[in-house]
Length: 332
Image 1 (cartoon, rainbow, N blue to C red):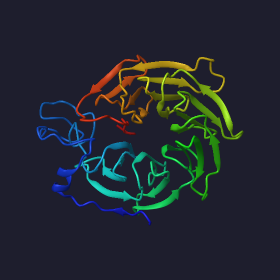
Image 2: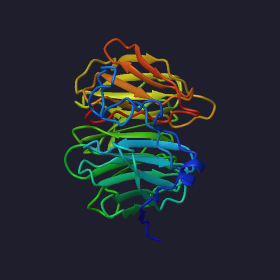
Image 3: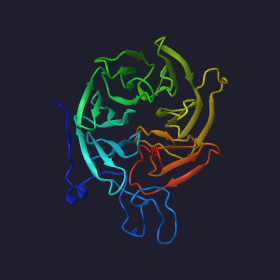
Image 4: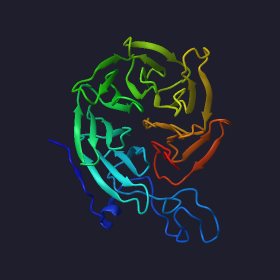
């Protein structure tokens, strides 16, 4: 059955009955002027309608979210098996639902064209979506177990990578019907990332290690060791020279992945966030300028670190459940 996008009705009853986290407008912030200053003369730092916006609409736990490259739309993925698209500004309208996955959607990403979404699911599939038409354009079902992670190449051809509990890392091309490369990992894969140059992919999972795969050779190259528990999130830095990892050992690590780097590639270890017995796939992210990093945390707090000082810069409460992913806006 083809997956289709549906325009969401703006229903107060629907919003009241949802279980979503992420953001709701505070009613006591009427003095705010978008992108300007408050009546008290305090300068706003974003163009949001209010300092905190809550987006309500999912019928289950929100597991992943990403802003579009231009920052105008946010896509969220949920255990309710759907993807929702939201306007970033004004009332943060939920304007589209993408249905098709048969189980929880575990990760979502935008391709660089800003029109196509990539998602993976516990239904063993990877899917691509046209957000202009609101339809599924690809359903890839070569994995034989839960697909925990996916990631597109940020520059160049429309390539992407996926990894799952079947211990396989698969590289795909949007222009091909089947995967163009399959790599056998030593353990179930919880997170993957595409190197900026497009010549490598990174995978990590239950073996506590991060593996850099050389795509030309079709074999493992570099292995990054240091985490003492499962690695649940990977993200390549904006300039492409560093890799960020989030682990169940309650650390974030920054790795130097440049060629010919020193043997000890772990440059920084950051502390503060928490994993829990629920063993969720908590992700991580870089700010657009690479000066800050963020991570999901099971203690219901949003953590943001200053990379230079390694100190927690912000610890933001408010969520009522595990924070699975924290992402930065590409422009603000």
